[in-house]
Figure (tube, rainbow, N blue to C red):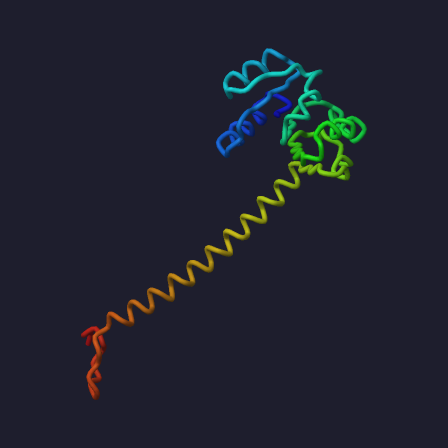
Length: 167
């Protein structure tokens, strides 16, 4: 489910679909915009005041609205979790200010990530990729040296000329 139908929500929903999400539910204060985005994504729209009813069926919620307060807090989420029968729920809050109260992360089977968490994960993966590049470059240098050494003609004993015929 994507809460909010702006540019960030649209890009996030498209990324999820490209990575195997089966369906997208869109909810937005403007239901017309939710319908428009849902049609573009082959998903479905739900009215903004009805998105909580979808919790038994969903696995991931991405929230990106411009709301000045939390849309989802621990008090509102706790009873919804009972309908999920202990299935894990991933919440991704990419809104500024935040849409989801951080304390929901203390509920069992709820995993909340915000934009700062995602940036830290991205930074860690970037560091890992840079470390791998350094390792690859080292392997390449070693292989080039070995290849050049194997390509040199053997030097007969007592011959003082350079190996490649340069004088």
